Amino acid sequence: GGLDSACVDRALELLDAGFAFRNDQGIVDASNPENLMGKIQVVAHACNYVNGKCECGRSCDHVDKVNADGKCTYCGYQMAASLTVDGKTTFFDTFPNAVIEANGKTGALLTLLKNVVLIDDNVIPEFKSGSVTIDWNGHTLSSTATRKYTMLWIAGTADVTLKDSSGSNAGGMNSVGAAINISGSFTGSLKIKGGTYANLVTAQSGAVGIQI
Image (cartoon, rainbow, N blue to C red; front, side, top):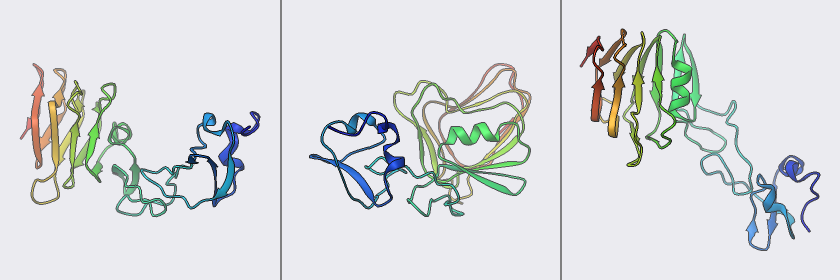
């Protein structure tokens, strides 16, 4: 039973909008071919997206659907951050992805659009060059209790300004370990003009250009 193995990887592509695959347990996630083995049927289905994905396996790409607040008008997903450079704003689903894009840019504004929790120890947002202002915008960048590494690494010649435009310093960073770690070879600048920071801002020996 189930779909032919030759087309199982293209199941969602072949399925018309408004329909989904179902087994005797209910709607199945057709993005996983293993769910399409055994007895299945096609039934009418209205997608309900949670974090950009429906239980049927369809995902929203958010392309040309995100409003000025960073919310997808199609599926309701709230993007994590926006980056404005030279008057053009781009939205990102993760904070680290926004940092990667901002690194090396001049006069960039990175705005947090929701509370974000960093989980993966292998992902350390890092600025090495360029000039960027991070506006916490009333939101908090935090980490899980098991995360071992800093949430923001600043090195090289990067000029980084941290602020919180909420007016109440409600936004900022909340970390089990160091919230910000500054390289000893750092020759740029870090200016903290607003926000709340817990736990630490640590600077390795030799770091210069820090203003709080």
